[in-house]
Amino acid sequence: MFRPAASRQALALGVAAAVAALAAGCGSSSSDASPPAPTTQVVTSMTGEKTTVPLKIDRIAEQFPAHTVTDIMLGVGDKLVAIPQNVKTIPFLRKVYPGVNDLPELFRNGGKVNMEELLKLKPDVVSTISGGDTMTPFTQAGLPAVNMAFNTFPELAPSIQLAGKVYGGAAAAKAKEFSDYVNAKLAMVQSRLAKLPATEKPSVVHIASYPPVVVDGGKSLIDGWINIAGGTDSASGVKGTHVTVSMEQLLQWNPDVLIIETPGGDQGLAANSAQSVVDNLAKSPGWADLKAVKAGRVYLNPQGLYPWDRFGPEEALQIQWTAKVLHPDLFTDVDIRSETRNFYQKFFNYHTTEADLDQILQVGSK
Image (cartoon, rainbow, N blue to C red; front, side, top):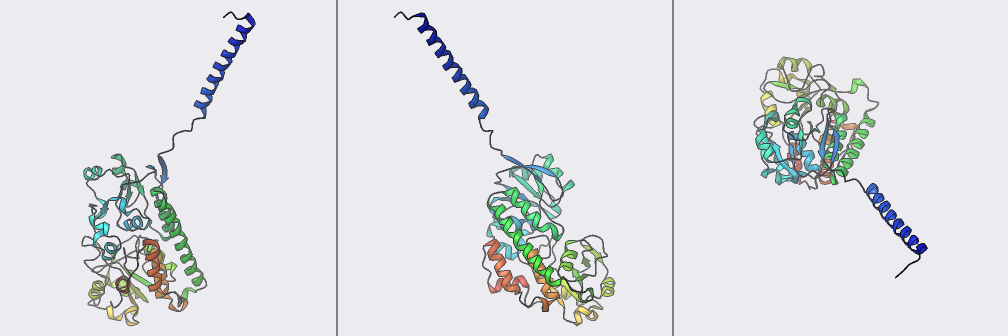
């Protein structure tokens, strides 16, 4: 049908406008499209290394025995694909988390590992025993590695929160819950001891094993919780951790209090007990003359999922136990059995029996 020129011109202008609008719309849609959701995050380890890890962690390789307890506490035990040697030797840990019995002990003492076997397990992240050179073999193999371990008490809560961030999801909330708990308990202990004069702080020696006498020196985690709990660390002048000293040195220190650890090593944490250390020490010349022995102030350090005195979340219980041991009159309201029971229920969803508590607190030993 014939259209007037004006009508044809209007139609052409309309089509052009429609095409322009469509083009503009397509351009707007392209520029406003949301960027893809991130799949990784950058985290900073406890020793300062920055590592890119997946946001979704499904497979964890754990190099550090004590940190296995943190993994279980944060609810990611079912994501472990490899653990360190000797974790399975701890009776209470096997009871609280039976799944540990099925995991390969790929990491040997000192963190040594068969990298070929580890790569077969395809971990999303490796939790390392320390930073620096310890992480290098993993990063060179293309495995994200993060040091989430702590070496001093002030690092405890941040290390747990770092693990929560790395693992994500409910782990982050649990890490925050734990941090709030340990900070509250630390504040309680410190407030009660704030005005305690130095003359009322008993001298303490913590013995890691014997024979020979092995202690931890100043600025160590051991030294830290002794001081937090209102004691004076007789071994503070020693440099390093797990340092051998002579029996003569122990006799010279002659501490008011002795705390004996459950020894570890190649034989594991269940093969020997703190009681065996005391039994061996009792045979040593001069032992019976020590002030702590004469006063009946020789204590076996509790061991639950891990020895309370070393590198695990049970450090929160350690400061309370030690404070009550050193200053019972200032902590009469602190019921260690009740606190221990509540701790494992709250953070591990495990109800301890009276027999469990006796075993953990090493009741009846010495």
